[in-house]
Length: 604
Image 1 (cartoon, rainbow, N blue to C red):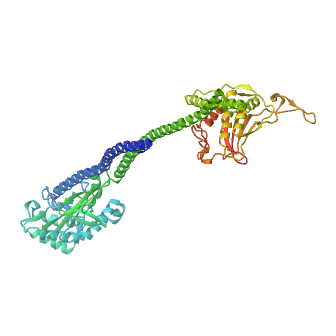
Image 2 (tube, one colour):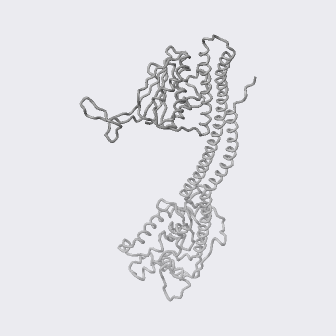
């Protein structure tokens, strides 16, 4: 015969399936959405940094190219410390300081510089001043330091321009070169502007060679043409830092002149201030995805945007999104799993109760059939006059015992039904508990002795009045005695001990006592009534195994599962319920010498 499927296993499988499929779908959809959201959060600062770098690079390139275009139009003689303006009105010698002597107008330019045909390197801003004034003026001192650094790079600048000139076409484009035409007088004053200025202030300092050069220039006639190249961007090292300069070549009758200006890092930083992220301008190709290249002629620079703080914050936010989803998901799965396990537990409990009730029905049928069979047998013998006529009284006693046994089984079943419905109740009244116990034991004794058991009763003559329900106490004792008899049928010693005592007596004051008690000295002492009374039923059977004790008072459980006698497993359940209804407790422990002992304590 095919064994029916276990409902609990089936319910567990269905619950797992019902949880797994929606959970998997939830995780797939939710995790994808959380991942997309986290990716958007992580990409946002990178995207913003890239956009900011593009805007900054475009703005900086536009500013630099505009600056180069404007500066390429500047006359070559502005780069001198002093110059003669050929367009100005003058009589005789007219030499004035360079318009660049007050410093660059555009904040992107740090300084202008020039290497003239005689090999002298000058900065228009550095007009000759005494040494004490140079030391006192910090700006002048800074320019002197830059001048020294630039002068060290002059050979490099000359080599750069020479290579550029060799690589270019034989004839430069018109927009890359322009020709400035000066008359000989204007050319003379511009060439020797500084010397003229010095001679006017201090003629004794003009050397013989310089005087000869001046005479030679004055002897010249006609116009002078000066070819001025456009400014081109180049990268040189200034103070061990790669710096951006604009250089141009000027061809004059006196020889080659190198002119240019140095880009100010502070000016570039001002342009980059508009960025929402920290930004810098570096030489070389881009180093990261957020960097944007800025090509200046043949020089490659890039704008570097630092978005590390925002990227780190975005990573933290993205992680928080993922963790939040996982928490919600795991919490939901955990809650659903608990609910599913509760459903499986309910199915298991229902199945267990169904098995127990099936077992209970079989046990109850057996328990009812046995006394009914005895009743029918002895009643037929009495009715038909069968058997030994001298034992008619014994037959009648057997009929009464079987009827009592039948009533006990039916009473337990009715009591359990009331317990399940919550209608089980007791009605305690003050009375003599000792007398009630004696009466119950006396009523049970003949039937127990007929089954081979022996009673050993230890009940004091008098106990204080206790509130108890007589019928409930009788049912408690009947069940405990019946249990002891059943579980000692194979024991060598079938003695059942019934003990009743008061517990918790101690001396107290006269106002609390129930009466005096004299002693040998004649001094009156008073006793506190017992805190509670207890009665116990002990046997010498096999006892209850430890693995069974924790469910000893559960429905349909019996003390010894291996070879337990027939029974419905409700006796101890009703005992516990009735004792608790009195406000007392019932406990189990091993009896001295082996066996089981049940102790019932009732409040006094």
